[in-house]
Length: 414
Ligand SMILES: *Cc1c(COP(=O)(O)O)cnc(C)c1O
Image (cartoon, rainbow, N blue to C red; front, side, top):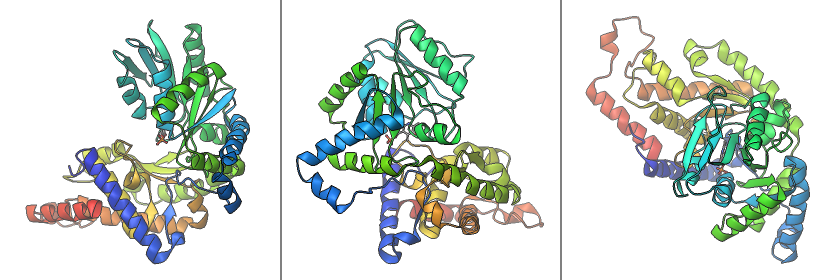
C-alpha cells in the first residue's frame, strides 16, 4: 500500500495540480483533456465581471439563479451552496434531530462520504444505508430520508424504486433529501426520468460542475419552508456559494442543453465497441457508465484475485497510479488524480466532458493503451506476461519490486 491515508491523497492531489499547471504552461490548455466530467466552467464575460464588483451584480445573479435553478431542478426556492457536500451538511444540520435515525437509500454502495460524515456531527444519530429495496425499512425515530439518484460511479436509481422510497417516507411524515449531484442531468437527459422534486422529493441538491459547464458548487431546491431553515443554517456556517460562483452557475445553466449529453452517448458506443474487441483484460476491467467507461477498484481486485495481475500494490494504489500516469504521460485528467481525500478510486473516462469533443476515439484508445501498459510494467510482478517460457523466470525479484515501488511513489507524489 502506498496511498495509506488522506494526507497521502492530499500530496497526490498537489502533485497532480502541479503537473496540470506545467502542461498548460508548456503546451497550452488545448493539449490537456479533462475527462472527469466535472471540469466545470466559468463562462462569465467581462461585462458580468464588471457587475460583480458592484452591489447590484450579486442581486441580479441571485434573481436570475432563482429562475434558471427552478427551471432546472423544479421546486419553490433555490439556494446556491459552496459544494454539494455543503448543501448536504446544511440540510442535515437543519433537519436531523438528536438521537434520531437517518436512512439513506442508494442504487449501489458506496455513499458519498459527506452524508455519513455530516450525520456524525449530530449527537446520537443512527445512520443506516441500503442499496436493496427488499431490505429497506424506515425506523420509527427517523428524521430524514436521503436518496442518491445517481452515485459517484453513475449508477442510476430505478425510477419506480425512487418513487416507492419517497412515498414510504411521506407515509411516515419524513422529509426526503435527494443527492442528485450528477443525477439531476444524467437521470433526466439520458434515462428520461423525472426531476427529483417532480417525483415528490422535498429537497434536492446537485453539483453545478457535473455534466454541465458550471463552477465547482452545489445548487439546492425544494419546499420553501425547509429551504429557509437550510439557508439559515448554511449562513451560520459559511456554506453558501459566493457571488462569483453564483454568476458562473447562472452562465452554466444558461448554456446547459441536454442534447449535448445525448450526443456523447454515440461517442461512448464507439469506444465500448473497441474495448469489447480488444484484449480480454480490457473487456474484463472496463465497465460501461451512462456517459463513458470506467475501471473501478473492485474490477482491479477481481483481476488480481483471478491472477490476471500479480501485484503487491492495492487496488486503490493501482487506480491512483493509473490516473497519475494518464495525466503525466497522456495528458488526460481523470478523477482519482485530482480528487479530494476519500473520493472513489474509479478511473472514469467521461465522454460527456467538454474536452471529449476535441478528442478522437482512436487517439483516446491509444492513450488508454499506452498508459495501461506503463501501469502494468510497474504493478505487475509477472514481468513478461506474454512470454511462453516457464513462468518463474519471468517474475520480478525483490530488488525489482522495491524499485518499481519507488517509481510509483515518484509518479504519485513528486
Ligand atoms: C460529486 C458527488 C457529491 C459531492 O459533490 P461536491 O461538490 O464535491 O461536494 C455528492 N454526492 C454524489 C453522489 C456525488 O457524485
